[in-house]
Image (tube, rainbow, N blue to C red; front, side, top):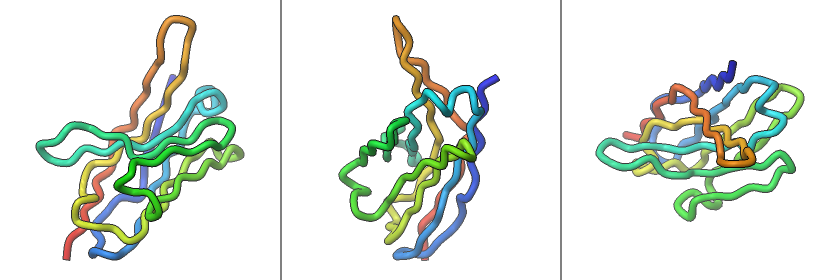
Amino acid sequence: QVQLVESGGGLVQPGGSLRLSCAASESIFKIATMGWYRQAPGKQRELVTTITTGGSTNYADSVKGRFTISRDNAKNTINLQMNSLKPEDTAVYYCNAQIPTIINILNYWGQGTQVTVSS
């Protein structure tokens, strides 16, 4: 059974930092491109960042230089270090695992964790 469990959300002031974590089932972590997406109220879910099994990363322009994704293969976990947070970073953050198959791409999602940036 695929499981993605997020932790680390909360309330932080503008300019502050938060660290999100996502623990995945070992069976998918070893083969999946992992990532974070976010969805703000009234908006569509958007890509934040991804990291491949080989450690290659991709970031949305809005978070480049402020967010850092990392992958701990020993713990089947990814982490998202978020610095210099802005009110526009407020959203529910979802952990994602993407697994390509012969015919399509499978997507698995965590339950989401709320990040609120406000003074």
